[in-house]
Image (cartoon, rainbow, N blue to C red):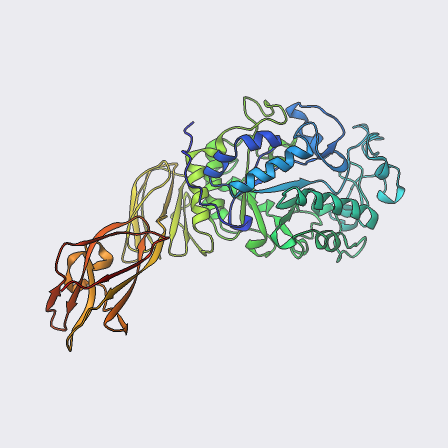
Amino acid sequence: MQVAEAADPGLPAATKDGVILHAWNWSFNTIRSRLPEIAAAGFKTIQTSPIQGVKENTMAGNLWWILYQPINFNIGNAQLGTREQFRQLCAEAATYGINIIVDVVANHTGNAGIDGSLQYVPAYNVDPSIRNNPYFWHQLSGITNWNDRWQVTQLGIGLPDLNTSNQELQDKIIAFLNDAISLGADGFRFDAAKHIELPTDPAGASNFWTRVLGSLNNPSSLYNYGEVLQGGADAFAQYANYLNVTASYYGDNVRHAVGFNNAKNVNMAFNFNAANVAPSKLVTWVESHDTYANLGDESTNMNDWQIKMGWAIIAARAHTVPLFFNRPAGTGKFAASLGTAGNNLWKDPDVVAVNKFHNAMAGQGEYLRNQGNEIMLIERGNKGMTIVNLGGNAAINQPTNLANGVYVNKATGSGTFTVANGRITGNIAGGTIAVLYNDTQSVNVTFTVRNATTVMGQNIYLVGNIPALGNWNVSQAFGPGSTANYPHWGFTVNLPVGTTFEYKAIKRDGANNVVWESGANRTYTVSASTNQVSFDFRN
């Protein structure tokens, strides 16, 4: 596999504007050792597996679910590492501009066994202050009707169900979350959030979400979302009033769109199918750890190409926060031990190209087009476009809002595309993506031409060997300058950082008669830090 070269990651300031790497089952030290690569791959945020103590110390990869059977609300377990190692991870991640989100299990604890009589009984090593308090538990039975909202929030999902309405238990959860924040956590993913009651539930309502989230330190700096799997009595839109939510139906649509267990059809990937929840409140994925790892093998048999094409669709889009699930390394579904890094698809050059496109397009809207059933064009404002081609070699000829020019594909499919007169044209190879945008930073450069006296009808202009200054064509020169401080003339030109060019000031009248500065051409290299240039007009 090709590996993307390290580069300036250009990560956005906030999780909401970037993409998440779900470092599933990676230990804290494993994540730390790969932070430079993760930053270079364009991931703003890393999501860890649950960091609470768990009922067993097994490291077998097929027992991944052990991390979702906690015994306390303390930081550290055998699989991921210690509290101090978590602190070190957060501190080092911050130096790369990377945020850390923690997976939190607040709905249930580990059970005493898989036998029907034990699965709703708390494990024997659950924190005694929790296990022995009868007010901390719902009844020891499971959901039988998933369309019954009371059952969904008040009964178990195969594990002992915590009474999350109890404020003493809430205090333990709040203390745990604030401890993680004190060590550097930048937000939380709440496991099984759909099974924790809302203040608006018709039966079994509680203040869990308002009280817990309202008690967190530095709330404005956190990114919190809940696993609210769609279907049954999910109350999906209501959860979005308190935290961000998971667009699980959309993930299924995207998998089908790229041809997994379905004929390829990009039209299936247009609608988020999220109960009219604003896209900015959604976390999107091609697959999650549940769709991959659960017994149903919902997404397990997807191939790498399908995952990449699906990722190109969701990560090129606006508003949502895309999450890239990292599968275990090796051959087989669970070849890797817990604590080790997964496979390398997260740093595939095409995945990286789309990550960087997503970051560069922060704040831009989107316009979606299709060209048949196998080509999707995702346009972001007037800055860039990603084209996903699920079919064979194709010629692109579509309307666009992009600025005129030639765009070079930043993904491995190579090729160039031309924008002229409101249309984009070019050729894209079958089964590839095209990532198109100009990622050069531009700055406003202020030029002051001092002591440039003129006669009636004359003005001062700048002319040089770049298009912005007319390419030495005096009739296309930049200006005239501002005379607010005559005989000094002011100009502000937006130019790409790093551009080196030659130029001069000229006097020009309405008949295009020109008086050039004397002497050699001036030269300048555009700099973001030194962007003010002053000089005297050489007569």
